[in-house]
Image (cartoon, rainbow, N blue to C red; front, side, top):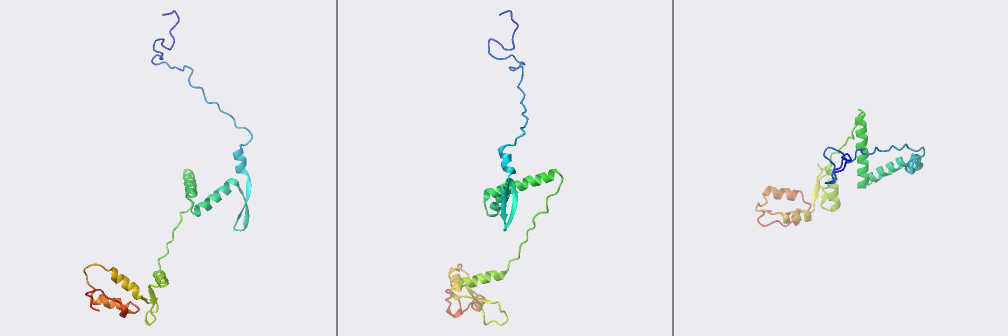
Length: 189
């Protein structure tokens, strides 16, 4: 060995001694760059104002606001990517409000209209499955089934259960011209 003091690196193995750093000065610190007084191109574009016509009324908006408006429109039109962006905007807004201890605007209330059975009646009339029953004076909205529809239902009827006398009576009562029906075998008409 030489008379020089032993360095932190071992000469034989090429490794540093246990407990000693291979970089005694350490990692250099990150240099902080002071922002320039001039804004970036991105900031310049986003701060520009554009005129947007909405419902026949001109509005002056920033580019950012115009892009958000367009995203909302696309989302409402069914664009999936735009919907995801809008949902993320909403989540971000709600989180910011929650962080500040504020409550978001009241939730959207969904109102479900009760179904009107007469809508189905109108559809069946349009399809020619039923016709208005003009002979029923007590029920002005009563309908009669067309014989072809009843015949199709009877033809599709499967199973070993035969039609009862009551079933036949009800089918005849609700069919426009019941005398034209062909009954399945074993049915007493």
